[in-house]
Figure 1 (cartoon, rainbow, N blue to C red):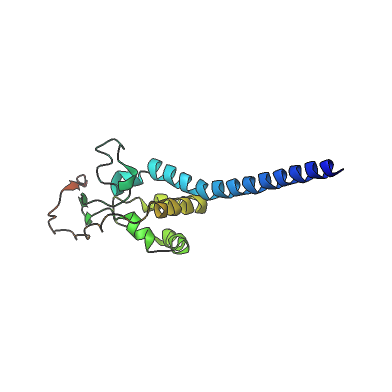
Figure 2: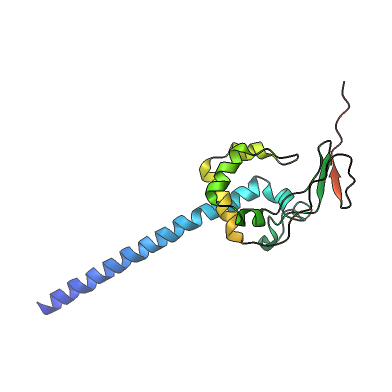
Length: 165
């Protein structure tokens, strides 16, 4: 009888431990899932193309430690000269809720495709936010916007509009 009770207790403890481990792993997976989704979205949506120095030139072979730290390569056109902001510093200074409230109202200068963010689901926006936050702060702020007619001292990609008519 004592042996039966011992076996039942041992099996009970083992089942309880398995449940705790499963729930812990499940919780960890749930927390990691948006971050992995955000990593994927940052790659396929082209966030790194502009917001990560050298990403396009190196065919995406840039250490993740540098991802989304902004760039000093400017984008110049009729709107002036814009620089890709350091998303890692930006996201550290806003809450997830602020991010979700900002995106629908976002209007930025070219070449930022802000409208693509506005077409994303809330789940995808949360994933991007959590991924960028998970990277931690790094780098420095991007150079400030330059209005039309102000010459940039840093390298730029020039957009020349087609002739009208």
